Structure formats: structure tokens, C-alpha cells
Image (tube, rainbow, N blue to C red):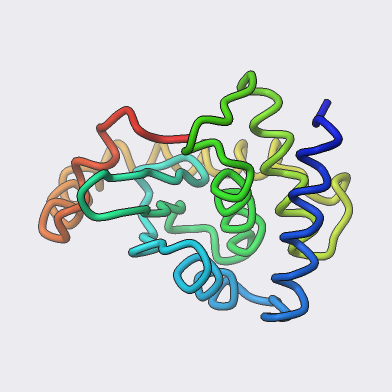
Length: 161
């Protein structure tokens, strides 16, 4: 269960961002991530199951999202931004289930949907089935692409949500 003070903090930020940006698309949420929270880049790659936010002490925050997420992009980006807003990268580290609940709460609010509609279990299952093909045929090429971008090391470090 999310603590009341965290719910209040998330609600204030949801209201502020919805008024300022009126987010409707993945592009809108990428803009929020960059403009409001200093995210350096949102990288689409099959190297993650759904999404991951990583803090690099030298260059800043990166959000990695599964390359096949266009349909669910706003929900996943909202979830990863929720980790930032809730402070999961800056000391507020409740149990994993509560961290995920806080991030889901933020994503649902920012995307103006109910928590029931935010069904990440189905999404994760869908992505797992796609992952088998990727691991058989595309991993080496994707590792090389991320290395050329200079961000592959961020997926192998431990400073994630």
C-alpha cells in the first residue's frame, strides 16, 4: 500500500504535468521526461522487458523502453517517470512491490486511466514471447548498436530503479 504522503506527492505532480503538457502520446511523455526530469535520452531497445530508468552519475538519467512498445509507450514511460517522481533513484526505496505500485499509480494518473486499465502483466507476457525471437537472432546486433550510442554499460550497471 502506498503511504498517504507519497500519494499526495504523486497527485500534485500528476496534476501539474497534466495541466502543463496535456500528455496523450509517447512523444508527450518523452518531452516531460526530458524537460521536467533531466532525462538525457529515451532509448527504444529489445534489451529490456518493458522499461527501465537508469541513473548514470556522469551523464544523468536514461529511460530504456522495449522497442515494440509503441502501443503501450505512454504507460511504460509514465511508469518509469513515476520511479523518478517517487524518489526511487534518490533514497526513497520501499519494497519492490510498493515501488512498482507507486510507479503504476503515477502512470495511471498521468495517462488519465484507472489502475485496473494499467495491466502490465499482460504487457509483460506479450513482450516475453517476442523476447525469444530477439535472443535467438538479434542480441549481438543490438548490443553493438547500444555500444555505439555509448549507453550499453547503463543496462549492465546496478544503479537502476
